[in-house]
Image 1 (cartoon, rainbow, N blue to C red):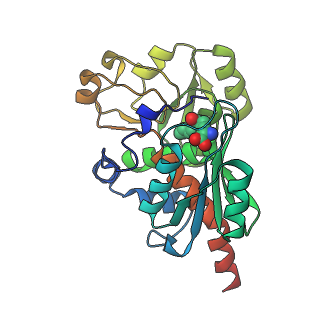
Image 2 (cartoon, helix red, strand yellow):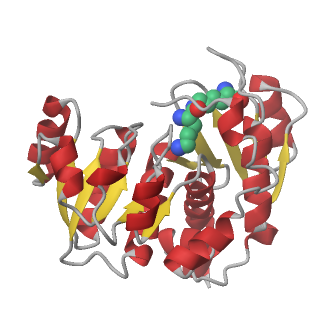
Length: 274
Ligand code: 2YG
């Protein structure tokens, strides 16, 4: 799993890349609409009555400068009443729980979760990132039903994205520079496998790239739609000239989808009780 660094997320708190403009241009929808769609909620769902606490976690390699502040800013942009706790770790958790928040966000070196306190359920960033980027691809590609979609990277995000895309009706091909990872996943979910990563990319128009890989533009198909959570992220100008859309951000789509899915545990329950 790729560990973020402060430079990769320094533009997140103030949304310097203006992600909504990129998303509206390439998918026709805002971050909020996409995260609501991912969570099976109405586009006009009101997240403002939900509260969240983001807890800095110092274990292992320690806190990442700007990480908690970035997560908090993403939640605020969704309309969630969010804050970063004064304290870190367990004291921070006790602070959040006694404040009576609906959701807790926290990440150590191995796992990043959104925990719904009321429903006692959580969403991982692996799932949120996989689902969020699959929904982005589906909208940017104007549907993936019966379309050939390449998933690059059979890791925590790629393997979940492959299953989600199959459930959306896509015909998924898996490729990974570690061939055994790709073939094991392909066997497990009944997806095609291509050992040659570059050949696979060069022969697919619809791509979800969940690998921290840099691909030269000569491999990108004309009109390609590339949904790419992979970090680090870089496409040369030939790739940008040929692709119809390349959608990436270091944290936002994954966190917004985690949050919407985490609140959906409560919202759908409210729906039941109505
Ligand atoms: O609280 C903190 O600041 C740190 N304990 C956070 C550590 C996060 C480590 N994980 C990562 O950097 C990424 N796997 C996070 C998710 C990337 C976006 N998909």
